[in-house]
Length: 331
Image 1 (cartoon, helix red, strand yellow):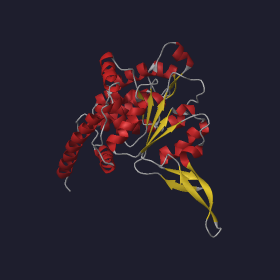
Image 2: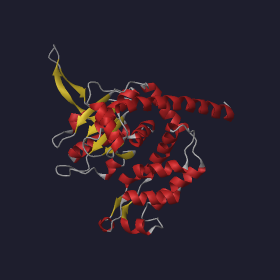
Image 3: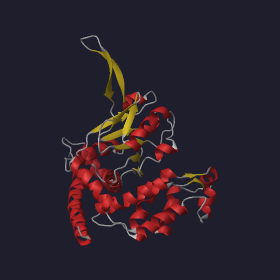
Image 4: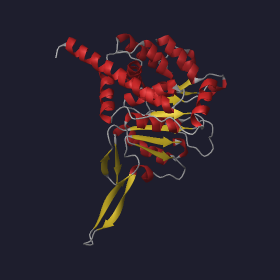
């Protein structure tokens, strides 16, 4: 296939994808009022083939959003409520000893809820570190190991976890290694007055609008492959590299980063940003990402991969403000 033919084929696939994604967003809007940016970032996570961490106060429709995404994309979803007494086997599954009619005993693996296509890990920071770590291999490798045996997870496999930033008592902060597995941290804000009015009217009547299935699993996989095939201009690549370098205290020329950032983002952050900007461009009807996409997604991709020193926090420095400034300079 010639280069021109490949470009034309890619453009045709992208045009068809834009229409299908517009239908998906329209269906989501029937169940989720407002939260347009949150919905866009969540879809970008799925289109990038990654995992997302939804952070917001109780009652902001995080659980409803995850289930709605599963309905619209056709993914088989399961929900696990994380609690301090949750054990790894409660997520991954376990082997049980069975005896057949002949009296022969053997072990049989009973899959846990992680064996789905979209797992909602509700209030993930309430579980113990041991249980949190049980998701690490699944999120990164796509399989789990129980009693020395490998068990492959369904494809595609995504984790959308929720976290309550208000209550800290009885919680276990996620370790940096697991935070890095999340492609994006998506902050869920309170609705504005008009959106909240619409929510009140839509959810307290006799009937509620429900989202419907738009995509199939096969279509979602094709969209994920399309995102990886989308071209990325040298200007965007340079903006990503500049942003990563500026955010690392040992290489940055920025005084706030050198003095106030304990550690910066690793290469996985750059990989996540490369995929996310392509997905955002496709969701907005564009064939290729721009520097504006890098600036828009810098905070969701980087904020959970960086940490401020105590002195910097005491001086009033915030990661959101710092990343926003660095992204603006890089773009």
